[in-house]
Length: 198
Ligand SMILES: [Zn+2]
Image (cartoon, rainbow, N blue to C red; front, top):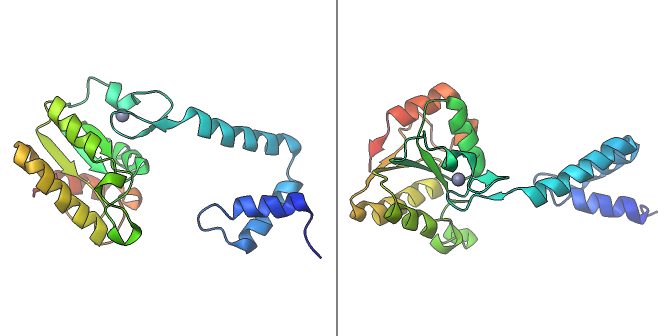
């Protein structure tokens, strides 16, 4: 026996989410069918609204519903520092720490030749352009402590240092392989305070 078309398609959609296999997708699909119609409608409206209203900040690459994003618009922030992260959610982690007052730049990934991710696939060229136009005197590289994160940091340092801009790397209170998004606030604070020149 096969599932009715509507369920089969719902399962297929859930399977497009990361970490969801066919078993979980099937469970979610049947759960959805049992949900209140109102909740299902809210859910689908929110999915569409998130896709429609959110985009990347044209300056820093953060996710935002207004362009430029709130952080880039905030003139009270320290305009002399840019902290470079892999993903928009890393900005949230840094902001929770409530200690860093500078600006950000989101790479949207790391260099990974195995996955075909070279410098052109990342938000690197806009960062270099940004550095030419502004008075930034320090770039803090906060890519994760993975091998790809490290080689991306080295690549950026080589690119930026000749312009006379100081390039620093987060201190590794963050153990190797640990992600910024999961680090607690104390650890992040120490990593930023103990940053070292590359
Ligand atoms: Zn921004």
